[in-house]
Image (cartoon, rainbow, N blue to C red):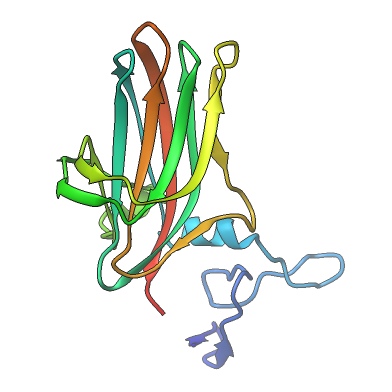
Length: 194
């Protein structure tokens, strides 16, 4: 990809290197080296990172399910899912390819670049789908009764890559004897399929 610089010429776009408003690569003023940014940081800037975060109550012995449905044109990278519990004694389980009877209630992905809210993600997220079979177990986490946070903080080079048309079920299971007030954040990178 080429962009024009302020001198009227073309420069090659170098991924992960920030450019000024004239199309010039930004450089360090002492060593004149290109300034680079982490790829996750860059992907937030280009509007490819999305989050769904909320607080809900989960009855004793009940599940709170989240269905992430991928489109036929997108590729999802599940970066983070973190849950905080008021009770503890819960399971957080990630499944691939569940059998879905009904999608549930459509939720909103929020773009991590607040200036790019008009972007449309390739995936959709639903709460409380009707599931007849959970699918293939990918990960299982336990929040023990004395600990009140759990989940996967999959930062940096750790993530789940979810190909075109593949659906993911993320389940929070409350095993405590009381209702559990939980908060959660689910973060994805949502890009066109290669």
